[in-house]
Length: 637
Image 1 (tube, rainbow, N blue to C red):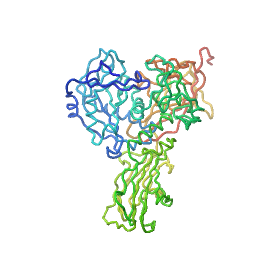
Image 2 (cartoon, helix red, strand yellow):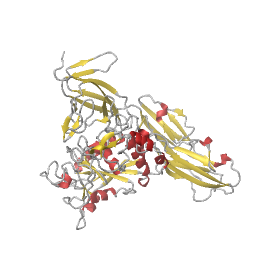
Image 3 (cartoon, rainbow, N blue to C red):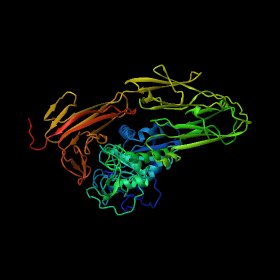
Image 4 (cartoon, rainbow, N blue to C red):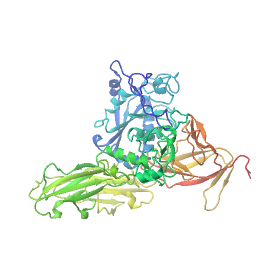
């Protein structure tokens, strides 16, 4: 539907879980005259490479725009970008596939600081580059937290990134504001400095890239949805089927049923979703599409893995195959390189698997001693990720690609000199984490195979099956800093990486307890006779923002954000939770998202775990403490 109250070229976007009125996709109001804003904006803009993993036309590009940041406030924009990205990289599948993503920041100073109608309709209009504003663009008929952006200006700024297009990018516009707000759809918006704003970004990309639906059970905040009345939803993560029917029909998320959910609990059948409280079911209790701060559950993660992978080609380059080749040369493929695991390569000759080749990226045909005549050679590249179980997704172009060559033993390959050199590799300017797959690609002479020799702290590393990808997890690195090198055999050409194998440190601070209990073999226990607060702090000796996470009683890990009304305030636990803007935060024990969820107080003893994820992707081992909340009138010895 169209919003009549929006100013020309103002775009309102699909709402976020816990952020906005849900499900509204509002179009751009038509402009009677040409809008001069985009041209003026682009003249003042600077494109900054934040993360480059390859050519823009071969990558999924996330383009971050800032609005309401003056020239003097650009450091604040850069800090907000860093915070949002580190939360995104701590969220699967973005963590595993960040190597498929280029990130760009387009810096364009605004004449005035802040954005329109922040926080109220009576607040000033600001002269800013992207004309962002709360209240759906200062529309009294909208809602305060609906944060919009000038679509023409945003598109023009994104077009400054060469090689990017609407087909291979996601635009995220950050407003210079601490007020809660955002939106998603074609574009995503968020306030840059609010406690929850960085949690909105992965949820919004879930909408726009994954086409995932909201899983919460209300349309307008504070108003419970009714019963769902439609047919079987097309949504991959909503159903009317029972668990038995899903299994019998091999439908929806039947392959994941009964498994521990990445967002807490188990994958099953939970009532509510698509803005209805009843008669429709979702896979898990509180995935990121229902409650900000949690992970994608396996169902959403599988969809997102497919969608991210579909933006790129697993085979980035290969030996020429437009004409018949001879058997007197090498044949090669260059693949993408997920952070969390190498891709599989299977070579076949006339349909038979060449098992002795293993996962090699280069095949010397001379060693095959082919029978005279013509043969068909293929290389099939597949992503073996455990995030995908659906065979149809695994076999799709997103996760499987095949290259074929016609080989004729009568053809002679002309010899052309090719210098040994690296053509692509994991970035060397920032440390890599201990769970990273580091890669290096080289040039491809037709008459020989360039082998790589890897060393860690000066000692050789075995890469006999695939010397282009080194999974550092297999080395079981001791905590600390290490030096990794790759050298092209027979040359002095080499690369060196610093390996950060020390996760960020994490600590907690609690409000004053009634008493503290120390027992041998158990975590320290803090006893409270009322609400208490917890502040988590992450510290790292490297640049970038580390992410803190916590979970209660083994439930899903939740990104720590402080408190919804103040990022610097500690998280507050209460027996039944605290209602803020019609959502519930901080219920100790069983989680509660909306006021109509079960509010039964959870007294007694609870285990609270915490951990950190640093910019290199290292995840610290969880630590824990016990929190005991006494019911009213309980003895207080």
